[in-house]
Image 1 (cartoon, rainbow, N blue to C red):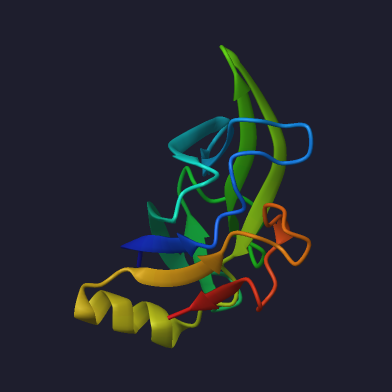
Image 2: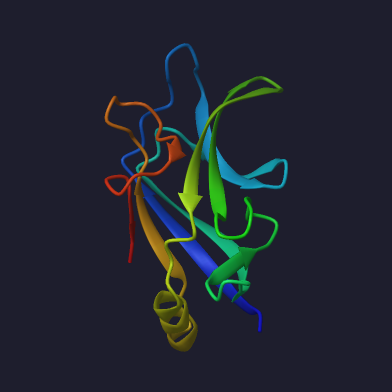
Length: 144
């Protein structure tokens, strides 16, 4: 059985519009090769709404699919992409990986029954003051 769900990423604590040599820094959600929902790096907060499909994997665990979902079964994730713009040029320089395999069936069933999205709260600045990147650690992401 496949279930359509919405994931909402509630993002705060943005690092700013400049990072190292990059000016005009933005973040967005990766959809295939594209970046959507362009958001300035100096935003106060942002909410990214991402549709996904959830089904039962071969091991019985939740398996997520859809154009925003990356990875192999058992290690699915979403990407937030950090990039800089200079006129028509776009330079991607970091990605933050939001792991989905930590979500339980209980969380998924609750979201479906309550007709609410699965919600994650993300701090967008890392310990060094830059944009969060790599697989997000518990201090950067909290699923509600």
